[in-house]
Amino acid sequence: QVQLVESGGGLVQAGGSLRLSCSASGRTFSSYPVGWFRQAPGKEREFVAAITRSGTRTYYGDSVKGRFTISRDNAKNMVYLQMNSLKPEDTAVYYCAARVGYELGIGQNDYRYWGQGTQVTVSS
Image (cartoon, rainbow, N blue to C red):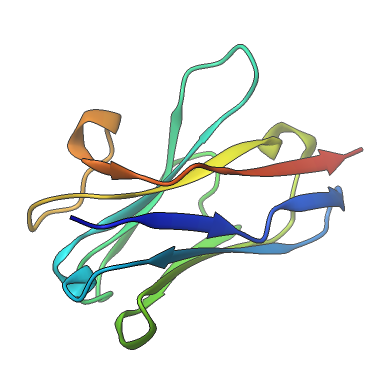
């Protein structure tokens, strides 16, 4: 069992940056691959990024490649999403999620544990 809490969302102008944090409870956090998803109003939840248990491999959705970076610090039970060159279309609620297993996942159903989300709003 793991509990996740996101933070770091807010309002930023287009072209700006934000860093989201995902804090996890539980001594076995390093056993879980972690992903970030986002959901804009009226749209389906979208895969953003994922990272392996050790942090050695990452994967990104096409819409954020080259702009977002996922990382983790297992000693602190934290996962981060650095978001640069933000665009208005990045506006959404961002969720972190933990997956039971070894491989990365890009579908919602790949992940068992979810945080409550943090709002990111990018103004034009």
